[in-house]
Amino acid sequence: MKHRLFFISIAAIFSFVSISGAFTRELVVYSARKEHLIKPIFDLYTKKTGVKIKYLTGKAGVLLERLKAEGPNTPADLLITVDAGNLWHAAEEGLLSPVTTDTLLTNIPSHLRDSQNHWFGLSVRARTIIYNTKKVDVSELSTYEALANPRWRDRLILRTSKKVYNQSLVASLIVDHGEAKTEKIVRGWVANLAAPPFSNDTKVMEAVAAGLGEVGIVNTYYYGRLMKKIPTLPLTLFWPNQNGTGVHVNVSGAGVTTHAKHREDAVRLLEWLSTEEPQGLFAGANMEYPANPTVKVDSVVAGWGEFKPNHINVAEYGKYQAAAIRLMDRAGYR
Ligand code: FE
Image (cartoon, rainbow, N blue to C red):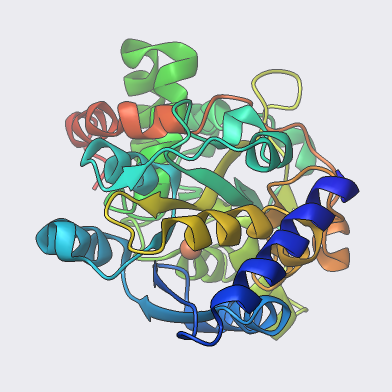
């Protein structure tokens, strides 16, 4: 591993030197990951390689539409976006081109990347249960599915079904249980809601902490952010489905665009992003988990304890997204 990285970096330096007189090497990245999360990493890459990175940040859907509209004229070489459902859509639309290199195939586990290598997960986010420690005894909790049980009537708080994170969660339930059983589960959730669905994960936690409800489902990095701000909140995480399918995980990730003008450099950047130092930064900056399993988890995140993740290939969330949306609509989950 070390040797390969060494040769890659030597190659990068040589080719840079050989053409540096002609022009400065430059890459363009479209990123749905926010500027403060990517800029330090890009700055580090520029420092190490001399390759300049221009980037445009925006909402995932907007960036996909833009890539589509620009077609062969796009300046974008690499797309970084959140949620496997969005990465899957980008690949389906023909906006990403496969990259098959040993570095990426070794560093990123197969369930966190596209089977055709159009995109690769770079950080892992867990969508788990949070609960009010003053209202809920941990022995009451077990699985996502069990939150459909009538014992949780008027106690459950959820984010809107319009958010892709919940569409991916429901898609994963469809993969594990089929549509009929999943619909029953989602109907059970809806029946148990203590309030109409909230617009974001932080509001879900605030409602649970305030006692409007007692239990909710959120991405752990939002929990990390909120607890950093208000450590006294009566909230904690629970890892569900540990005797079965595991905790629902998703990714933020990247792929090289189909019409990249600097494909080789884009591949090199993507490979580098899968290695130790940038992996630590990429995940750590947002309190997520590195996609590369050999990289150390941020200490605050590690403090939340270890869990067994669901090993469904995250690409399935894209495949079943339309079915998940229809199902949630039928079940009255708004
Ligand atoms: Fe998010």
